[in-house]
Length: 284
Image (cartoon, rainbow, N blue to C red; front, side, top):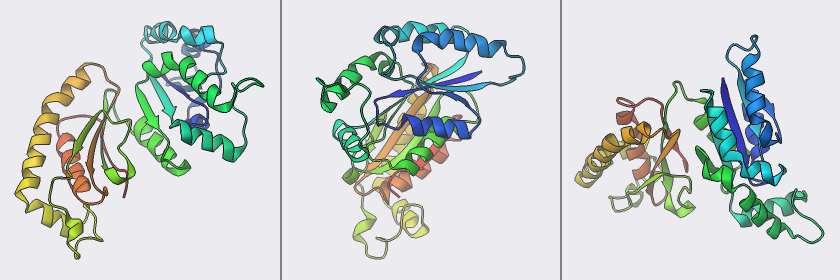
């Protein structure tokens, strides 16, 4: 059995996550009372007609506070049955959540006559703390549109050919902000920048002119070797510590040239020695 628990603050994209999982064969339950998790898994395991059951549930602040505070014990109970269980926590910056509720004119589930939207968001943060602390995967959706969120969820949750730690090597541009869900970040802005070469500016790090230019730079090769040496040594130890997801982010100024080139090379190298290595270019 595979179980995915989706949680996060209201407005962060939980409904989208359930839609993606349902489209890929998961039986989805929205707003499950957390206290029912153990019973749910027992009932599913007893169903002989489900040979490889896949279930996704959403647990959010509409739960009873007592159930949310018991979440760590409930999760331990589920995992004691040797169920493959991942906890995914979606979030966004507070100003983004305020904007989303303002634009859609939806009511936050925790607002009352005496509690403003901003106060409700802060209360929700505290209530969901026990789930956020135990999340295997956290995705900040502040800068993601609907389609980007769908793609991100598919990449991290569904494109995992084998059990074990899923590694994501991701390029990004600092000018659009650093990925807040990255576990390891490498800044490569000190390397020669193809952007300042007019003939290379409109090409990306996936294209041969930029590849040839960067491959000829001694500093670029030295940076690649140093990062590769670190990752080859330490990523297997992340996997040995039962981490479900590890994100390695490589950043340059715009996220089009240097970080893309190095991400491609590092991803190809890691795929030779590690399972479940994915490559993504956030800003291309």
